Amino acid sequence: MNITKSNEDYLEAILSCEKDGACKSVDIANMLGISKPAVSMAMNEMISKGLVTKQAYGKITLTEKGRAIATKTYNKHELIKRFLIGIGAKEQNAEEECCKIEHILSDDTLDCLAGFCDENGF
View 1 (tube, rainbow, N blue to C red):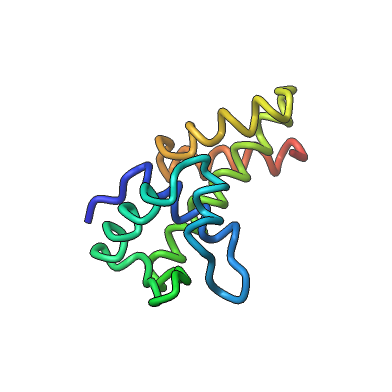
View 2: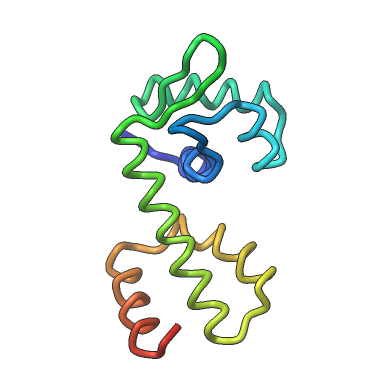
């Protein structure tokens, strides 16, 4: 299955805005700065990939597979942000840039980065 950068962003947004294990389309739209129809289209794609479920009244829930990808993406985000701030980047720049970097680094590189951050107290 092909998980796109966009899928990862949506999954991470759902994880971040969950309340009682679910969130609403409007919350995702607000978090990502996009329209509700765009969220609806993306959710249909992600339902077909088995990443989320959606109830009749709009509650969106991560599946086990979706939650695993969301958690991994979130952890990448936090690690890269921690590194960038640790080397002196401004927090706002680090936040924006780690959103781009998190989608392209390999697991091996992330492991190296985690080791470097731990060794240097980041």
